[in-house]
Length: 179
Image (cartoon, rainbow, N blue to C red):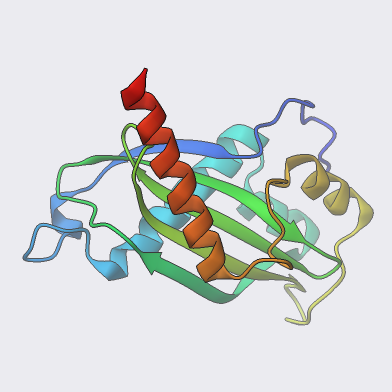
């Protein structure tokens, strides 16, 4: 599996639009906390397929390698309402020889109010042995091409990142209304 087919203008921060579905909501009309991961993962899968032209199932089948989730960090900041149109933005925020970190943001349709943030910690593994393995140079080059470069998870905690993103979207909304 190669990554040479990728253009040089791949967005670091991918984007998907979704609607919060009735069956995914709790009795308050909010997206059920358990369903956030489904929305995050579905958005990321669609974005990887559309933006990177990469089918992860084919990649795993062809290479015998893939990423497994080690840990999730998630913040529920504002409710996503039943029937609401939302935007999900995701990016590879960090990688090293063995790991990757994907950040996914859930926003309102205008992308001015942050609703939730997910950090997905992934380990690269051999699918036969289940053991962690090193990213090869092609994968590292790919990650460097698409990596979100606006912050370093090695220098900022998840909670600090939430504050940073909240301030960014607050400023974005203020500027949008003051124009």
